[in-house]
Amino acid sequence: MNEERIYTVILAPHVSEKSTLAGELSNQYTFKVASDATKPEIKKAVESSYGVSVVKVRTMIYGAESKTRFTKKGVQISKKGAYKKAIVKISEGDRIDFFANL
Image 1 (tube, one colour):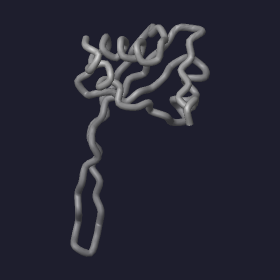
Image 2: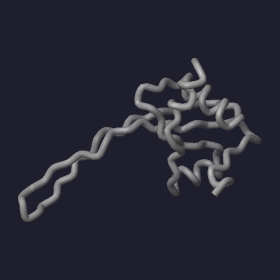
Image 3: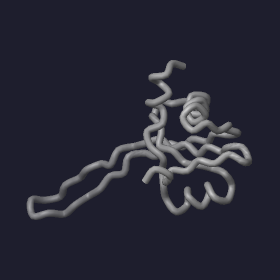
Image 4: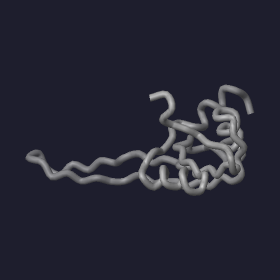
């Protein structure tokens, strides 16, 4: 896997209450990843980007959500895009701090 692909696999960390709690309690961190990324690619990208050792990678694909709005001009239907999310478990003793450079 080339260097360019490593940086396009991980799009952004997914920060929510549930993912923050999982990071504190069980060393699991959540990332939004490219839709065509595989588990070995995600593992290599996290290890090279954050300098940690990855134990397990779980992925899930969220489908597009349709939204309906009722306006003066009529009913407008739109979709919010689909994305892929990866939950990465890292080894004990390793930490990832997303808020270090804020």
